[in-house]
Length: 424
Image (cartoon, rainbow, N blue to C red; front, side, top):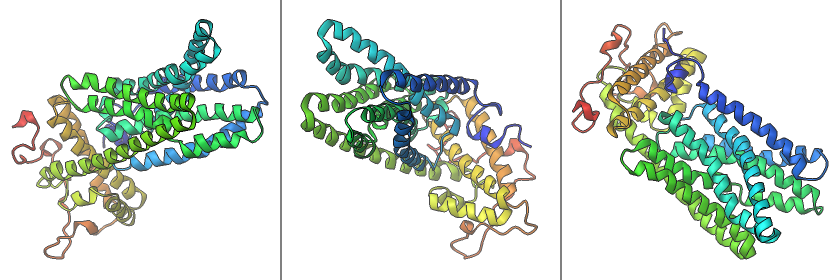
């Protein structure tokens, strides 16, 4: 029986308990969110019911975009607790911190420059710097505390997107409350701009910081120290372009900012596609070394490389062993993906040898138990349909590992250039 639960192994934890740092972060985020929502009553005049109406108007956009991020994050999904903390940080800590600092900054500037210049400078300069700093702090926190969870650009974008969506949700409630309290009918224009035309603003800005953090988490050398700073500068620039363009240049500035951000969005889509291909390439590069041990069947590799193949495997596992089989197949698929990512970190020298072998053994044991569970309820197990021998047309059952001691579950020596640097 595994000492660690499958979820703990997949998330790289050393115990079955949720990390204390994430629990503390979630509690702080929740408290800040309550304070931020309470402060809306003081900042925006109107009936208390406007908060509820504003929330109802803001939720559909947030739900759709969260679903979109989870769709992007399917091949190597991030721990749900991490995503909840990211969303809560944006909605609570970042939003409340930005409200306080922006308000104080505008008050100081109003005394020195007058109300109108103070408002313009706050919107175009102070707000982008302050808001992207508070949101980016969550990514720095993950880099320090949960560094191994950030395996590439997709992870950086996912965490940044969740944080940005949390921030945008509560900020939209604030704007919708202002619209409800002002000229009748103005609220729908606000909903159109913030909820339909440009709903990806905050997630996109913070995604720039997320890319810098992802580079720092997956690379060595001096570049990893400068990448987060460059990403943060890009986030502030895009945020300032949108805010300043609309305030200083009206509709023309807004259109220009929209076009620039449309290009940035296209670039992010390309980055996500290329990173998906990178992950598929890693699966095909590192996992064949485990085929001789019987841990992975040759045709499991193309199955792991596509979501369609993974769904097909989950369906087969359900018919083979019911819910136990589905859970086991899901664990097997995610563990195999984590194994490929682990080898990639070893090749980049972003993990020390001892940690590599400890984590690899945990993943191998999980995969072994998961494979055993596929056939738990079937006296005469049927081979997985993707394990068909393409040359003979017959099915080939993967070798079972029940009689092989755990310490012997080592991959055979891969071709030169594919093994970790310290094994060459």
